[in-house]
Amino acid sequence: MNHIPDIELESTDSIRQFQSEKLKVAMQYVLRHSPYYKKLFAQHGVTANSVKTVDDLQKLPITTKDDLQRNNWAFLCVPRSKVVEYTSTSGTLGIPVTIALTEGDLQRLAYNESISFACADGSKGDLYQLMLTLDRQFMAGIAYYEGIRKLGAGLIRVGPGLPSLQWETIERLNPTILVAVPSFIIKLIEFAAQQGIDPNNSSVKKAICIGESLRNASLELNTLGKTIAGSWNIHLYSTYASTEMQTAFTECSHGVGGHHHPELIIVELLDEQNRPVKVGDTGEVTITTLGVEGMPLIRYKTGDMLKAYDSPCACGRRTLRLGPVIGRHQQMIKLKGTTIYPPGIFDILNQFREVKEYVVEVYTGPLDLDELRVYVCVDDNEASVKEVLSNAFQSRLRVQPLLEFITPSAIESLQHSGKNRKVKKFIDNRK
Image (cartoon, rainbow, N blue to C red):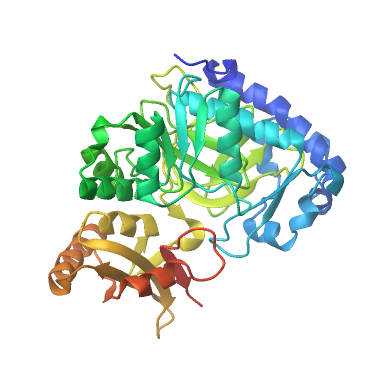
């Protein structure tokens, strides 16, 4: 078994006591150094003595992505001379946010990813192939790079795209683990089939999957995960992270949720009234960072909706586990009385090999209600695909979006519109 930090093996009460002490330090830090939290807490009568345990977090106001966007530099707690790296969010839900890191923050990122990769059964004997960008202010790229180095493993920086180059590298250098977006692994499988390559004869034994969920709310593999597993006999590990939290939640081999690292972050799942939900109920991930120097966050609502699990894991860890993202609070769609999140739509579309690419758009209809349009690119036989998709949407979602078939170039234009770093599969054009 890979080394597990001692705190992750402690009882729930011991973890809470440990985090309560860390929280008091974090509160003292932001009250001394954060222009934003000094002002916010003064407005709400909050002092360092207001918070003695993690339960006292409920006395504090929450911070939102809008707050971070509007007051970005008011969150900075160190002089600019202490900033060694500037990263940014992808801008999926609005204006990108800059997150400034100190040398200590970079070391914290490296520690986080090293124990996360170890959680996913990685070791210094592994060779990782990184199929993601290290540029464009992408925090995850530098975090994975530094984490693998701290783990003591080898790495290959191939970058995103180009299945031919990825396979040439796999065959030449024999990596044991891939770090990639799941939908790109599908493209690797398709390329391999076209070229007569058997993925199961390769050196690759595992894949750390980022950016997209592999599982549904019941922790079973979703369509994307099943498609990969059905063609490539590798162990898949799902992850959950965001730039703002500067922390990752990564599955162990048991695949029952991403493990929480309590020395790095406090997690709450809140309802719309900012009250904690019951374990097992869906709530919005709200985080308080621990040990961050540059831009620490207190009770920051991420917008991500998911479930948490607190039963001990078979791996020995007794920390909280987070399930896959069910959807984002801002992306919730109310269509004809039914609540829908984009990942549910993606999962249906991913079932059909005839669907080569897609973009989901929500917009405001003439009655000021949500309307849904799905742009689809197929090779041929649109009528047949339309019928099976319509039936699938009706049976799974109980509603049918408007289906529009467009060309590959038109789909590519939609997916890469604006300055967003990520490929866009969901467009929100509501008023």
